Image (cartoon, rainbow, N blue to C red):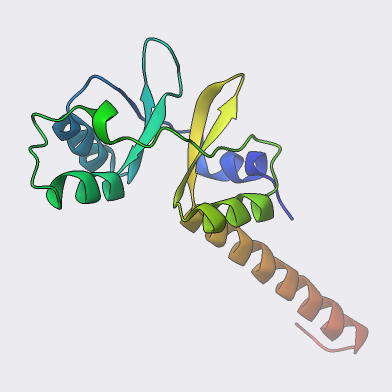
Length: 149
């Protein structure tokens, strides 16, 4: 099973963040502009103060009929951030995400977010690895049986 570092070598190390004192409107605009579903939230006290996702926005603002322009990110962000490191196995990341019911997982190095992975990134990597294994096994079987392939 691969680890996060191997996934990031393919995906890249991208991280988008927003300050906790910014408006939710600015956060949603950034998510739309960057085509991502979550942002790391920073503050003067912490490079990883929390995380804000589209789900936070819909549940905390839309359902409560609040204004995105008048609400700060710090008012709706998730403070208890689940994270992983580059050495974390993808299987462990997937288990964490399923247990916590989250779709975005910040990757931390020296207490700072260096990337964000999604459940989709993990599934894509696992499927690619399984396809490669299947191809290798099929090739081995055909060669062992004297066939072509």
